[in-house]
Length: 97
Image (cartoon, rainbow, N blue to C red; front, side, top):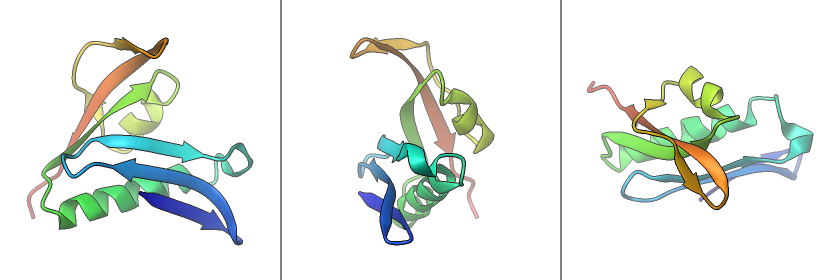
């Protein structure tokens, strides 16, 4: 789990599992459109690579799908309905260095 802060305020949180599932990427509305979500995801990806993971996967809301596509995630299956919301499974494979 990660906590992003700006000026000693919690701006967002993120989490992923050791199996490569991004389970949380939330930004406080007061900090939206300031790059907080990008930084959370970049940190998650960096830590996943250190753990030796080759990919990350997540379920995106339809609203956030464009954001995830912009940082390299692609659709990995049909939309799913979960907790009353329609979600899009997405995946990002890491390049070998």
